[in-house]
Image (cartoon, rainbow, N blue to C red; front, side):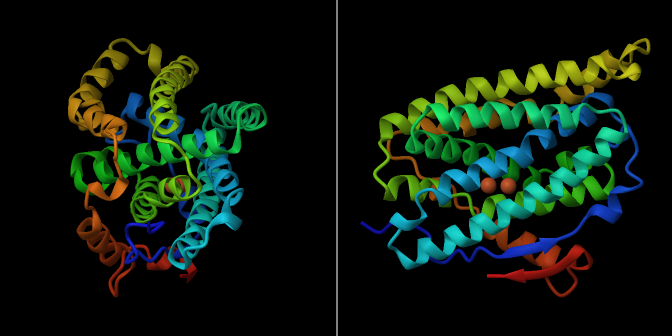
Amino acid sequence: MSQTSDPGMTITTRRMSFEESLRDVPRHFAGDGDLVSSHIIAALSSVFPDGEDYFVRSVRHFRDQITDPVLKRQVAGFIGQESVHGREHRALNEHLDTLGYPTKRFERITKAGLALRWKTLSAKSNLALTAALEHFTATMAELVMTDEEIRHALGHDAVRNIFVWHALEESEHKAVAFDVYRAVGGTERMRVFTMKVARFGFVLGTMAELLVSLAMDPATYKRGALRESLRRVRGTSIVSRALWDQLREYDRPGFHPNDRDTSALVAQWREELFGTEGTLNAQLAGSAA
Ligand SMILES: [Fe+2]
Ligand SMILES: [Fe+2]
């Protein structure tokens, strides 16, 4: 059996730098100054850097067991992309911290939680979690790339640019951790079980972070502000049934990330961001395939 199902996908490590553009990101940067969306995006960004480190560690652990040359190359691309994501989200989190978000505190909690999991569970189980969380990021990436309203909700240009670039690369490498998991003999049983726990943990964890983050913001206590903002967020596809169903597709026996063909979407956004007229070419310091 081939170890990878999409030999055509080239995974390029793009060395991006958004740091300078982050300087003028305001406190409520999302949408048109939306309170809850700003806190959701900040909470998500908080878990990325240490999450990405963990993804890299769990895939790198099995790197020597990969014999398929295509998958080997894709693993190198995956590690490169996730490392740059971690670095750029850390820069965003630093800035959000100066604005009063508890992003650095959430980073530390994420780091400690994942370090504990790494120490107490098998490397294969950690890889299963990485594959499961990669389905989360791929699902959110597809949403960002297809839904104009969600892109608007990301707000300030610098924040939107980071998330759109991240979305493109999550889509490009969405099958890599999964293919490594299969290649090293990860079972279907562990894969699906891990996802069920992850889904529960992710939703609960994000909700808890969101509550803490909102509680620390004086704007939350302005009369009617929270209710109004929640009403706006409820109307977007980030809380839709369709998104939840897409997350649950992962539980189907025999599921593979490339069952959803997003190659046209990837091609479209590669052109949009990094083509001849690419909107992010100025932030690109270099790249390696
Ligand atoms: Fe990433
Ligand atoms: Fe990823």
